[in-house]
Image (cartoon, rainbow, N blue to C red):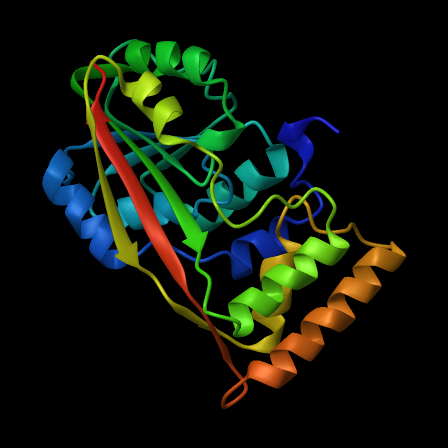
Length: 249
């Protein structure tokens, strides 16, 4: 399946269960890059608009570039004023040359062709050329609920490769070269009820698809994990929001 279509059948759970990014991270990014009411942002791979919504609350105007039509439509429906959906990709968009102050990619850069994306980012950016790459990375908890969740994915989702974002430091250095980037990490814990916990797993591209026996078995295993680790009908999922920021202009 084309990677751009992987999430077409899981838009609802993606929008409802994926975590937002740490508010402290968003504030730090705003201070670092000068995000405010006059800022124009191109959010590449915007998905259902989770990070775009946080940018809009800072007063920025946001172009949301998303190749997947159902996800792009959900972002347009939920975000409204200040958000402009764009049919396109990180490698090619219809944004005018030098039209934006900041490029962001939240939970999406690992899907891009880095060199082609860098060329496109340089084209749409005006100086100083800020780029911010963000991921929410699930953390180990020493054998608790998060590790048990991970074990379910290891057993029932063959394409699962662990909770990291898959971008090594060398790859990121190459992307920002010759400039340097700053990496910051922010705690971002979320307390999830059973429905949100389950739907968080359902939203992943690697989770077994609807109608398969693997999905049924994985769901039953997840319910067992939730029941063993819940407190007051919720399980805490520990994330770290990782932010990589630099100038490429």
